[in-house]
Length: 179
Image (cartoon, rainbow, N blue to C red; front, top):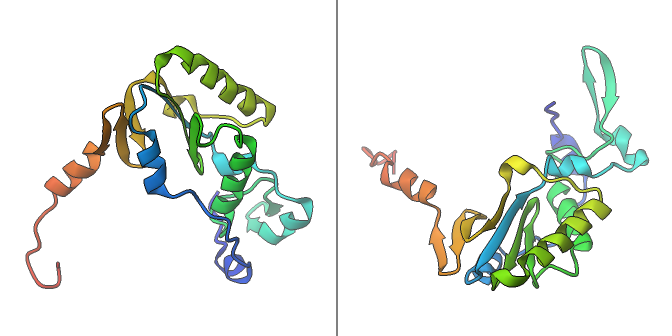
């Protein structure tokens, strides 16, 4: 379901809750030996709307008037709201053995030895908060992987090969307008 929240977003005050700095997140994860990459399953839809706010995001279909009872995509403050929620859930892990950017989660460990303890702690928090992950977008116990558009590993940071290939295969400009 796609709903246009343009007018609501214009009327809604901005939530200035800061998202984590991408550069810091990527830099702090390089040099670890083992990683778990996780992605929340339909992230925003895991947040219940306040009953008094449901009517503000009502929409019409051929079958009548409906309201979202979970947070839909497209709301101005959805990212900040979601980040605030996961920061609260994982407050004891963030910066220590985990990093999160909205619905992208990374569990990390310098040595393989206590890796399962970190993962257990993460899954306990996921279960306690009823937060679901998408198993198709997860990788566990790996030595490298993509996080926020970068390849990270024990050796450091590399650009995502998909992005490099896109640049290498880009057609050169043929006119001033193309530039």
